[in-house]
Image (tube, rainbow, N blue to C red; front, side, top):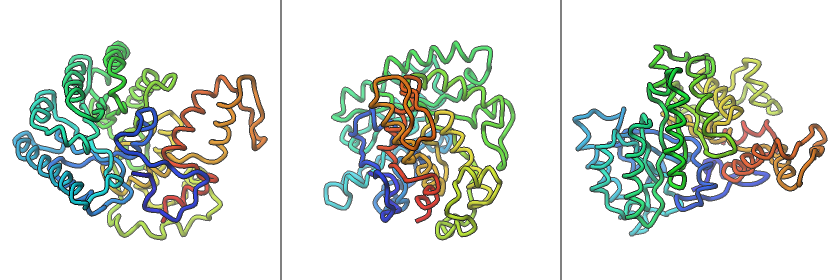
Length: 384
């Protein structure tokens, strides 16, 4: 698997690496990018075999919000059939392991998780990278990881967990910090098997009866912004974990017809930042809002984003790429022992110790998503 495969002719300063579920965790945690959610009853084997979404590198099959309680048994059977189809396709040469995205199942609750994995053939962990734990909290978190650790003892592959921080316990200010500390202790105890920490801004919004409109970002909703701030403060310090950004709810109609020649109105020497700040249209209201929020995600420390629509994938992943100036600054910082040095572009001072954590993240992002010449290249990368 490799990011930006939909644009094979694009010329990178440094191309993104190839990765798989067996890639070392220290790099793999940066590679998830846009994680596309879909109901677990969907024919995900066909999506993979036909390369329906060439830009998709991470997929999450959901047993929770996307499936009715009474449909869980039939949905689980559908998932097993799809996994067997992938296994058969690998054996008979119809599927290359290079074309297998990072695959996760978002379980419904601890009981459904236990029941599902009890019937899951360990051979399927060749495809299943791990599980997503909804409404993760200090009461249920340890049990989720107990079950996950049992699967790791059975599997030839590392099976990862990804907790979603989205419950009422974290939404309400009076108990949030204490709960976050308890949750982090659980996650710390299972760090080797934790690939990402994820956030559920829609659930946080629900607690306060708010919803961001298409012209706003999640950072404009101050009650939700405070939740996200405290999660980042707890988990991102000293690069302990990669935390993924919240879902953007809006998408374009007729999106499949809108991938070609979208950027005719924009001069190629302008950056996405400049264009969005000047409220000039890049694609349309829905995608421009997504782009604006991705930029704010990134500057605040999120990497990647939950996606509920395939049209979001390439925008999320493209904006994770690193510019050459960022990359060269980061490499300079990591190579110098200390002090302050002038950047290669002679336009800023790089302070070695204060900027080291930033530099480490930039280099990993560059490995995962590639290094492009300048900010104006984001549009070229998105638009094949």
